[in-house]
Image (cartoon, rainbow, N blue to C red; front, side):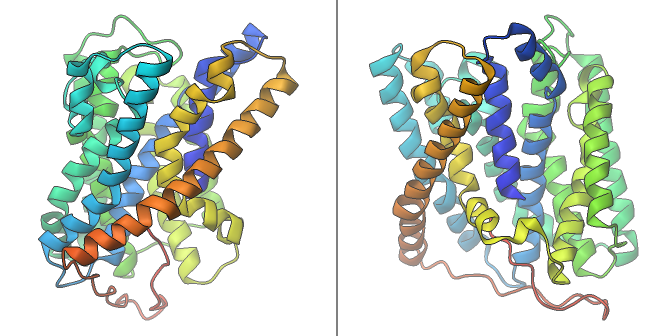
Length: 373
């Protein structure tokens, strides 16, 4: 499913660029799909908490955990930061170093300054939240494991309520003007509700709790198809809900259900298009796709031509750009990220965590879900 979420993020940014000659088509696409990208980012954040919890060993040391996580994201980030700076300086405009430096250290999302957040390879603002999540995870997982099994669903409900509360706070405490096109919120509102690392910690924690629900046999067996339909309905609702309540709130419950239902189906060995070798292979590239798609779009055929196209030609260029992204992502993943990750973790003496204990419910198969972050 990660391959779909990564493709949605790419397509959302393409739609925002308005590449079609038909101006009304550009407007309609932005109106219809304005909130889908928010859901895809939320899915990645929630899935991170879920996977880390499902694969966490009982005796995994925090230091080893942090080494593994930083070794996964920082080398790729630094490489692409340098590449982005070079491309901007060579082909566009020389970036202001003061605006660009926070993104190097992945602290740019802690400020509401748009110039800083989007200065270099803009989507890396989500990694600011990842650093916070990884720092807190060793303590969060211990806390969640101490929650009585019968209270896990109540805990998940409280976290959802907290997401709603954040939307309310964002609505009351920040200015609603000027309004961003199509999403119907101001930048200040979006930053508080959607971009702030502390705000997104709630999604990460929901992922942790949902994994614990599955591991302890408390999952209620929502069919995967029902969960997917709920997610489609959530997008329709999000387009109708005004202001801050339309960014995250409509998606949080459907995303939690989709993620857990898919994991439960995998445990049971159910067939799915998402388990096809091609889908799994693209899913393995999802981090690289996410990190490189803006660069390939901006400095590839679409960005360099700086024009619009009829529908057929525009769709063709979108497909070409996505193929280029896959090629670059494959090279980055298998030629740089994974070899360097193995070297760094081996050099630091970081050991893999033990596999999770079998679920307590005898009706839930004991095998682990094959999920890699």
